[in-house]
Amino acid sequence: MITKRIIPCLDVKEGRVVKGIQFVELRDAGDPVELAEFYDQERADELVFLDISASHEGRETMVDVVEQVAAKLAIPFTVGGGINTLEDMKRILRAGADKVSVNTAAVNRPELITEGADYFGSQCIVTAIDAKFDETTKSWRVYTHGGRTPTQWDAVEWAQEAVKRGTGEILLTSMDKDGEKTGFDVELTKTISRAVSVPVIASGGAGNAAHFVEAFDIGEADAALAASIFHYKETSVQAVKDHLKEQGVNVR
Image (cartoon, rainbow, N blue to C red):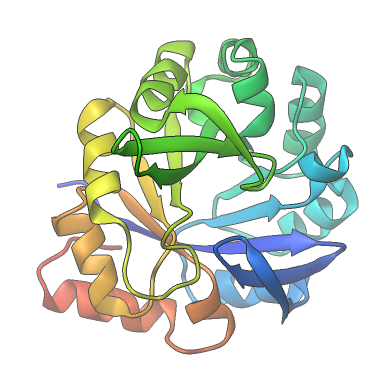
């Protein structure tokens, strides 16, 4: 049986970890290097580092911070934000990342996924999808530029396209649930999980350990990601894993 992964996420802006609600009202959550070291000791399964304002500000990811974080980690490490070219991917992986996450640039130019998968292998390429429910179409729409820009893509269709292009994993964030702590969007997660053949990471909405059980049991996610509940010590990676084990979920 495949073990489910628990993944803390560092949303980084101007060199600090921040967290908001539905992608706005950001507040400080600490130093990325210190937090990375903490989560490594906490036995998180992986760590995701997202430079959340890079695409919006039209600049590259902070390679120096990535290098400092990677130096502290023994666990797999995914980096996203402002990765627009194959050269950007090379720079981030050389800086110590194990995987790169692409979002805005991949929507703008889907060939980027293929280029990365062909060069590094699909296991290194994560496609991040920020999705919001559209009342008009009764489906989920893909947003880019840190949740600022709606696109023409339906989330299910874009996830399938990304897999066809060679992505090895989908990092799926529900913008409606982000920071609300009311639970993951299990309907969205299940819909995408059933539509693609690669692992899906549920993101957006974790408020307690029970929400992770729902993400795995109902949402059929392969991994679940959270930020504020870990950063602000509302719970811990170990506490979540203990609860999952009690509920019969297979974790490391």
